[in-house]
Length: 567
Ligand code: GLC
Image (cartoon, rainbow, N blue to C red; front, side, top):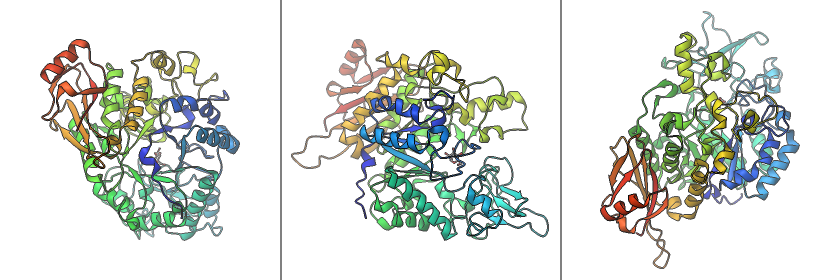
């Protein structure tokens, strides 16, 4: 058994969605050659590792989340050879590599499925098959999250239904079959032996379905979720993966977990009790629901209070017991500035959002393009959208209404090519890109932000470096001020000295305004403005003089500050 050093607790990760990061061989599709070209850029963000969305061979029904071979790298991304170079080059720069493990389902083009539908052993029971009921009804009332209807698809070859919680081309694996779990372990071992450092585990809390696949409450679009999420054998299966494979490597696991509360998370991540430590971190969705109900397609007005409540719960309830994963963007959600910030105050609100999560306890992830403040894509027709989830939403609504919803909620907004410069195709590729480039690329791009010391990009670099230099960010407790404010987010990180002769870790006070109007705030009791050390954010001479004298911070729209104080 390898010693698990929990190195991820000191790290910050960058997420790459490979199709749209950078095209290195000019065929219009992002690839690993492009990533290799940009490794120094990634390193310059002061991050410690990369999470790759799936790189495996795939027909692309869900942009790689439908895998047809788990033990290879897609030719369009450069194949295994490019991957080995990438791994070597990344490790040489001190960057860890995390793979996406997608084992709730495979592609219907995976060999296992092709054999299963023909009842060729040992694959016959690799998937969840059910015969037609005598009354002609479907096996149960579960919904597909991507198809806008039933989760059951009739297969003419096998003359049975198969379950697909996502797209029709993503049949669910039968994890109750021990042979399937052996396959998963082979996949884990294969990549760990290649030298990867861990896994982000796609909808892993869905892998154990309730016995007998009973009907669920008719939750619109998501019936079934109470029967397959956090199912009866979930801990047992995750423990099995840990015991038989993961614990033999110094690696980390990050589980995607829709509908998880801190209380539930503690059952998966218990740092005190190895028997209850199934995984190392969870991707919770509560911080993604400050402007929507459950999914981005049921929009609500953004509420800072709701966002703060989510942050507070996870920060306080996991403290000392489990480790948080921190994020505001990934490939499944539209751009955060367009959601929680302001496109008008793009850079300012981008900074306010950055300090809001980067100084919490946990391991932060930054999604490609987030660091330059990319915003939502707004095409003129719904026909330009590509994402399997998007195109099946609101199909019965009129074009205008649909378009409005897609502008607001589509995952495609996070999937347009990264904007590297103001040149052809935003510097993403010389060839026509596989997907549209956001029209704002001449204004928003990496090259422009490199040259501006006050850019969001340079702010992210400083913030990440700062975070890593302060032990109180890693280990300190979390306390919030102005909890009820709908405009200001104010939190403190503090801790006791480790020993009497250890240096004072000090206290950190993070202040972010989420208002388009100037705001004022008096420092909370116990913080002396005269002794405040401003580590991040800018104060003009006049602002600073007033602040030092009165303790009142006058902030422009979306002001963002990180102060340090002695304990
Ligand atoms: C996860 C992925 C998402 C994918 C879905 C089905 O939520 O993050 O991109 O579409 O699972 O695999």
